[in-house]
Amino acid sequence: MLDPSLFGRLSFTPAEPRQAPLPPGRHPLGVAGARDAVLFVPDGLDPAAPVPLLVMFHGAGGFPEKVLPHLEPHAQRHGFLVLAPHSLFPTWDIVIGGCGPDLERLHQALTEVTSRYRIDPRRLGFAGFSDGASYALSLGITNGDIASHVMAFSGGFMSVFMQEGTPRVFVAHGLADEQLPIATSGRANAAKLKAAGYDVRYVEFDGLHVIHPPVVEEAIEFFLQ
Image (cartoon, rainbow, N blue to C red; front, side):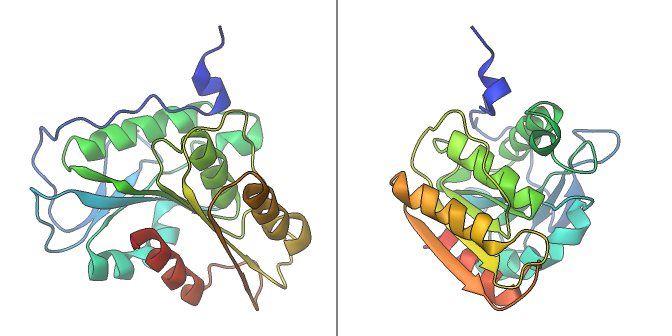
């Protein structure tokens, strides 16, 4: 029997926190010597209460510090954690040739976060931009029993061999996207998900292949509803 991780399945199961929470700010998690995952902790979290967690996957050639500024003000305002993994290679394993090291490192990062915080299972989101959005869609639909929400900003494709759970899905794409044409990416992905019975909010904006701040704000509202 093939290992489910080859199809993108996470074996992650949250456990009771056993370590002290981290102070506010950005923290490397120590899951890798290089290209480490980063956790942003907002001010004022109640360590005894379940907290929402948003996992944000960067685009090709990106890194955690490039995407975190788009989410940190929202995390600070609304009181949720942001986990920003770092791909082992210039983009995510699923884009290069299949699930492997990035999936394993995501498992380690999630385990590290839940060793310090009790995560609200109703608010554990997978989000991403560009290749990261393709990764979020692929992993989120495959692991919808873990991810409650999936948010794809200008993603290209989905690679799904197994479907678990029923996450709510937010898809946004620029009308003038010069890298991933909207007709064959954003619109096609949203149509496939709706046809499969998922609860999808689809947003088009007047712009290029970018993270559009008003759309991020709408996605965060969607995540926290």
